[in-house]
Length: 461
Image (tube, rainbow, N blue to C red; front, side, top):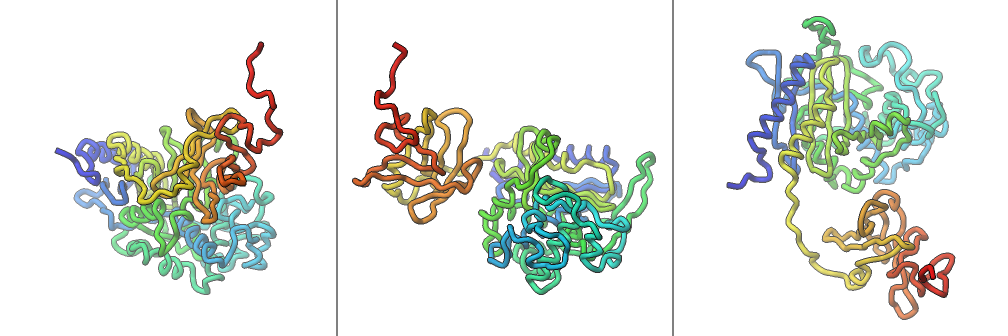
């Protein structure tokens, strides 16, 4: 008997349920809901609650806090892809008068603009947005604490500025733009700026007694783009699929790869813990696995969405308490349970429909100096170049349409790969950002910088 790729085994399902049960009980959460996505579809949902006989499901809304930032970043990248802005534009080019000087759009997305972490005045997450009617009320008299581009410093006001940028360029409220350009195309009908029944209530659980206090639910006003949204495990599961695969109606898979690429310099402690921030998304390391997504919190609620792109598994965890279960650990463990118990089954290998002979002659072994590399042509139309054995610089390359290729990853990201030909049309060597790759170590007839000793290779004697 064969289990289908979409169906989880009973043992896996029980392990998932056990993990959220422990989190809800030990974290003393009034309720906790979770979902797991594999191969582009939700394969498991679970819930635990303190209310007997009433468990929330994948349609019940919870506030998702800073996961909202990923939605806002999607809107900004849409504007970039349309040519309405450049990520290196100073924000003042589009929103004059903010007082942010040369802080760029990219720096706000990556939290490297040097802005303060919070707004001036009362605790913004627990006070009405009407107290901060203008951007000046969000930024205060001293919006920048450090020079832009120097370090990662998480900034909620920075995303409020991005929300204002979206409104300025679209000529419509952030909430309306989000619904029209992201929520509706992706079918996220249970994601909204304000709670829509059925939704969970937010609670504070006393740290030293098993009693609770209801938390206020505030409209964040100008701060909405940083943390306003309510959503469900069902909608966030669909959003996770989009964040990996893209959707041409919203953003391409290539732009989503860019969003998942680390963009911010970090403190030594962040490097040691495996944390990095991208363009509206976080990358974290846990159990040897790289996870990308975002966490979120607002008074009364905790949220986490994490994806292992390599395993093609995502997990969402939501709880209605101000503090309690560590939802990143929960989501990471849900991913691990599925990835380890039921490893991804790769798609069947299929040959290329048509092989380009000029590409075929480039495949095989190449040398950068004495380092052995291999170039492969893959069925997705890309070429890959990496060490023949062991670790080292490697990348896939996308064709540019003019006989050259652009690097997609790592050291070679954005670098140009081209085949240099002799007058008779045969290939002399590969040039990769000035690095010369030859068919033999320091090939004698190739244009190796510094030349090759005419006496060639020799022994000691």
